[in-house]
Length: 283
Length: 290
Image (cartoon, rainbow over all chains, first blue to last red; front, top):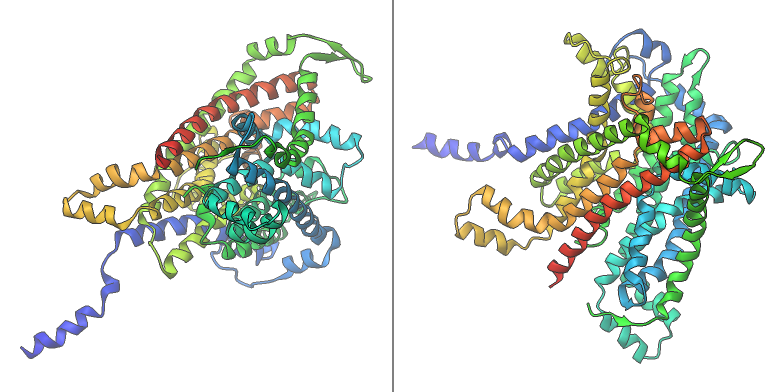
């Protein structure tokens, strides 16, 4: 009897040991996602001779020399600055034009609205490879080649439709009565839009901004085609590591790790809205 | 929601129109222009009619690339959609672990595409990569730069690694929107796990899954950077997908007429297939709001 009462609390204190199928699936999946990233990280902490010389799961003599190389060399870190400049420019432009348009699509029906909406989406479907050459010629002919604004405008091709799409989804969720009440109260359209409507869809704007940031940050083909020196993005700076003496693996890995950081930072802030954003505000 | 008819709404759309006209219509017109002309250098162009398109339809190179592209998109959709749904079903519903999973799963989505390529190129190398080294020491003669099948497996696994989370996140969002009452009703009916999935979860996820399929189809059909970094289209032409071929033609060989005709065909194929998905999606949307 005494034994029985003694074992009971003990068995209750080990719920962790119960095999949970879902947890196993998630652990396997997350391991699959993280192992390649981990490998990049360890490589960035090794010297080239260690990378090529032997095989080890953990760096034997961790070094930050690779990061120092990048952060002290202007031709390296300017790549990050350039990327960030055009990404931010693109996000601002995309949101500025997409906000009124998304409002129009979510509130009014007008001549050709459905066709227009699909036509906008077709730009999201356009392969960047198709546009690479004409963009190059267009921006060269107007003297914008190798400027940040050229890349920012080029990325609008896919970011504006996406921003309109996401914002429209969020705006649809705001009841129309709010608009009508505001107009009755004597608000003009711009005042209503800025003072009342924008705060209501603040999370939608955040998500749209995040997506513009993300797709502009990860794109390479157009940003590489449209720049040569002054606005060269980090992604194409990375190809520099392939030199006459072979590839500088350590620096390449360190540069790769540094490109992951901005994404990882912003993702933390929007973690609860990511899924809703990918669902274009329709969940 | 009932929408008011208001033609003045066009003014709100105008900025978008101007911007997209600049960044889409003008370049697209250039492409159309090139596709019907021939050049003998010195910037002199001649009307060539539909010659380039005829060439294109008879070009084995294009059909091969299209075939590879369709195979690639089909393969990754067939893997990523079921896998993504499966992962979503196993994700923790709320609390700290849900946040941790969301953040970690989104990580691959935010890595620049050439870095994704680099990660896998390094990861799969037999001399310095964990995957390649492991396979090699297991006695598997793995070499993605020489063997076409290995190159294909590598880029498909890479894409699954890169994008399955997108499908999972969308499916997860769909699952979160199912009211608890549905599950309680199912429990009262003693429905099996499969029945719950088939008749409650799947129909509720359909809308977001269509978006996932649409996005994944579009992006996989335009994929360029990641396979290019990993295999460079090789070995031979084994992994030369449409975009890789097009860039080779347009920026490498400066073969404007061919490349332009190719571009137009490429765009039309994407448009046609996406239109089907889009129509299905809009119809599902309508059915849901009713």
